[in-house]
Image 1: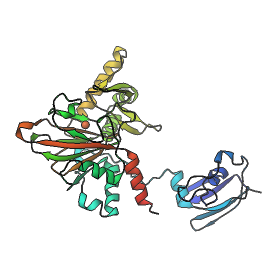
Image 2: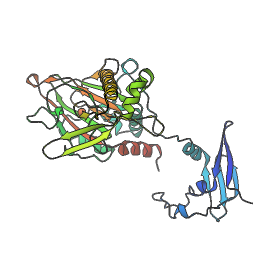
Image 3: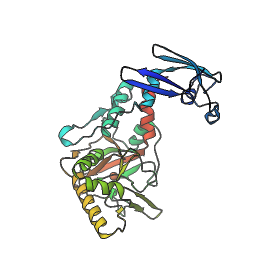
Image 4: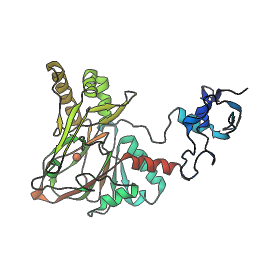
Length: 359
Ligand SMILES: [Fe+2]
């Protein structure tokens, strides 16, 4: 008599129960999935509701199974366990602030020469939400050349790349000489661009220093120290709006967005683009207090790591997690020209998974 559920042990403490259909739809032999792309060749919804496991055996780390519909195959128990426990190769986020963190810098001459160095860079990127790359060519379009070594670039209404220079009648305050307080880019887009790359071609002006802030760390600090503010910031939908002569982009979202497990998912913060909803007086008072407190944290010396992007450096940061900013600069003291572009997390996550699981 077959079984619908079998029980496996992984180490002394972990015991897990496996359902027959759950296992059956993970068979990966050539009769079940295309070997080029691992996509299923049958419809799993149509498997027999009463499917049973007729026989099974465990040999070292391999589970061998024969099902009641005649299908059979083997499973690596570690892989099953990692899937059940949701263990991913993408490193977990590590919160940081100025007191416990030094700038993470990688050398462009090494990262594409050696896959281990690229793996290290991408792991650090996921751990801290950014990396700085030095020794790129201080030439126009280099940011695209760099980004495309990782994967496709995301075009927006700013184009495939954008020039951060001071110009007349700008459609964004980034293209002025003004200070930019800590902010995330493009919170009005659906979806928000995942990763920003900013490349320095020239930074000879007085001022124009850069900064990064870990939004995950800000959210963590608020949740422990100001739970009432945290609650209102994670529950109030605000409107983000971009307007220029060609387009008007609008989205509604929370300043701090949580996932289905109430863990940090994303920060959106840009005072120049954000409008609170018209709530009743008490709720609005609380929201404005919370937003002011968050603004002060995001621009405090404790959370803001300051550095100067110099010629040939790229700052690559997670725009869903980190905030960035710059001090004002004086163009009469020298030329300042950055170029930027956006890529999505598909690019970096996908690259890292593939590098860690070579064919
Ligand atoms: Fe920006």
